[in-house]
Image (tube, rainbow, N blue to C red; front, side, top):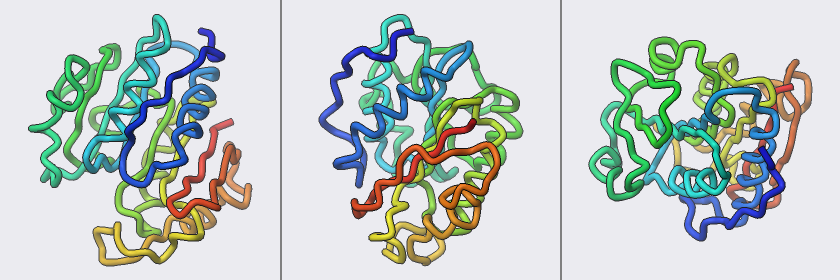
Length: 220
C-alpha cells in the first residue's frame, strides 16, 4: 500500500490535540508501512468524547483498499455516554460494542467499556494492534500500567502514542482518576522509553514544546 498519498487532515480532533494532528497522521503512516498482514488496528485507551477516534477514522478511510479497525476503550460506566452517541458520531462506520466476542476481521469502529486487562486477555488475545493511543488516567502508575498491559499486543513496527507527555503539563490537574496530577513523563522514564533503555522500542517523536505534547514510540 502506498503510504506517500496526500492525506487531508481532519479539522476537528479530540481535547488537547491541537498542533499534533500531523504527528498523528505521520505515525499512522509509519505503523501502516510496517504492517505485514490483516486489517490495520487502532486502539484508543481513554475515549473522552470520541473526537480523536473520529479523526483517526477520517484519516484511515482515505487509504484506498485498506481494511481497518478503530477500537475505543473506556471505563465500564461509560462516563461520557459515548455508547449512546456513537451512531451519530461515527455514522455508518460504527459497528457496535465489543462484549463477548472480538471480530478481528471486521472493518469499522467498535467500543469497549471495561478494563484494559480484560480486553487484552479475554477479547483481544493474540490479535495485533498497530497503533495505540494511551490517553486514560494520566497518573504515572496508570500510564505505565496501560503500556505494560498492551505492550505484547503491539505488532512489530507498531506504534504507541502517550498523550500529555510534555514536561510543560506534568503535575497538571486533571486528568487523573486518582486525584493525582499528570505523571506521564515520569512513567516513560520509569519504563525506559524516553531514555532509550527499554529493549525493542525506539523514540519517534517527543513534542515537548507543546503543553499537551505527546511522546511517540515504535516497536522494533
